[in-house]
Length: 71
Picture 1 (cartoon, rainbow, N blue to C red):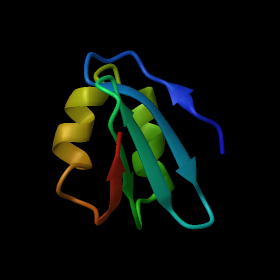
Picture 2 (spheres, rainbow, N blue to C red):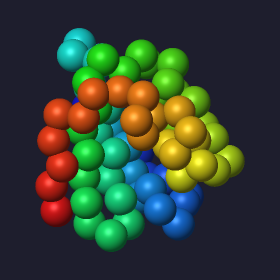
Picture 3 (cartoon, rainbow, N blue to C red):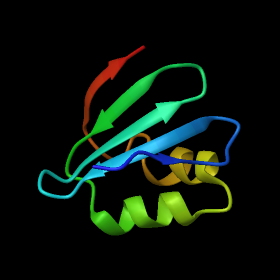
């Protein structure tokens, strides 16, 4: 699992575990959220997005089950 740094004022990085369809989102403020049952295509679009924060707000947050949040 590779952590990909993102150019965003909100989202700092993302990691994806294909076997479990788990997405790890790291925020600039130090928080980390883990989402389950996320399709690989959603992760691919997130890391390719010109605005990862906007993509997160509209296509990930509230759309997938959150497994955990930490600082």
